Image (tube, rainbow, N blue to C red; front, side, top):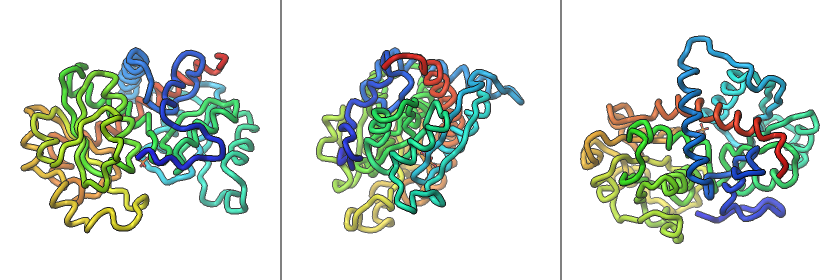
Length: 331
Ligand code: CP
């Protein structure tokens, strides 16, 4: 999993989440190393934004005059649109750069592209890129605040925060003593890494399960327990997350067939029935229905998939507000 595709002299990604600590709060590069109090502050802030966002026509001037560029070098629906909506709700000036159709096709590098964009008086850059470590690299080379919207197989911190907020709602804010299962392609999953780091920090136990070819060798050093079957990941759990099979990241031969995957690892009603009463089902999206999650589980009463999306907007408001408030800080 930690096979970072380094970008030029980008630092190793492990520990990059510490950028949320004092002096670097304008960046959010990962959840690894983010202190418990910072996580809880962000979750509380997101919950307050969620209340405001539920008020019809709510709009704020909080980020008036702050310019934000959403730089998406990789496809996205939920993350890109929710950052754009959060920026509009908070009154920021914002623009979205999408790689396809840009001068990247003429050989311009990612760093030169971002240097061009930030020369247009951009304060914050929200970046998604297929290379692990690229947001940390940009944070070292640009003056703008950098928010990681998903980098390769490294982290997806705003996804991690929205997953934590969704679980906090389900668990009445108590993470200690809770058990959470993550099932699927852990090796390629930045979502799993951010969830594991955040849940560990807040005191929940994490168990992971998936095809042995998709479980990284260093999995247990991340702070989770590897179990051999999906049933074991479910048993006694307070929640489970099915990960998307990432066909676009997989080299050949890691999986037999999608049908075989669904049979051995897919979330079905029978399997989720082994969780504790009140347990919830998460999926970061986009879902491969009938592969990692059965349609009647995706749409069932335990599913929090659309709550995750709603919480994503609130979390992105909280993260943008925090980064904007820290723009004047010395790092
Ligand atoms: N969960 C997530 O990152 O979805 P998108 O790729 O659609 O942004």
